[in-house]
Image (tube, rainbow, N blue to C red):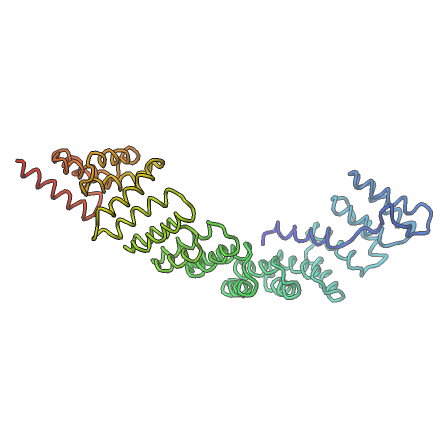
Length: 421
């Protein structure tokens, strides 16, 4: 917790949680019997709202002097303190009138803190808590202990606050003390995990867990926290983190299970199945995604995985089915992956080599350095008997990939050249 947060915490306690205006609205019935009292009080409030805090304070002090009613001096103190005016003389009057009133003591503590009299402020709050043990007072005293670097004492008061209020702010204050200042990170995690199991995970709670798990390199903790964030917020960034961390662990099965459960990213799920040569599963995911969303990108994947799944038992009917899908895709999408894949299929199966070469060239126009697309073009030239051109394309890419199919193509192209010689 920074010094800024400390001051903000105190400001909230002093200005919002402490004194309240004593004057009713003009439509309320009169509360006082002294002539002109209500009118002067109303005028003091209006003066303050118009931006003249100093005059407003004087009016409320006059009302106190006339009536001896504590509400007026407290209102004068509240306005003066919030406006940064000197309030010491007002405070003397209030303390002389009622030295043990909680609002007056808290305002006195505010003045002491502004004057950096932290020890005296602490003593005042300890005495007040002896008479009035409230969350408001515990918060002020805990913040004073924190500023004085008395972290164990601050923790004691924040823990009391949390037991009473169960507020997220007090929970995070405890966690910050344990993790940052007391070197008791495991206890901080225990607090956060208990809350997460019992009540779910807000963004603030989960982000604090992410910070700690990241610092301690607890990958499983990060995964479980990001999963809960995604379940609660349904934001893609958290699902991406889950998959990223699972893949970092090389837990491909876990990543696949998460993507199946969450329906987060069909393309990623297809790619994971394909990387494991599970083309039937990839095909089913792509087919379902295309049926659900109608995106041509998914149809292109359907065509690829349909072909890969049946590669060993290819038929004319299957080639026709795959080709129809690719034709539909490339009419709209100028996507290199599908242009090259369809082009290579037409070349490799001698369906239409010239058209296949034209499609591969369109892919190369988008990604001219791709060794896979260059290999497809070389294979097309080989099929046409243009082996020297094919060889010239293959030589520069041999050291850029370890793909066996590319090496096999190169051997056949070399054999073609030797034969022609």
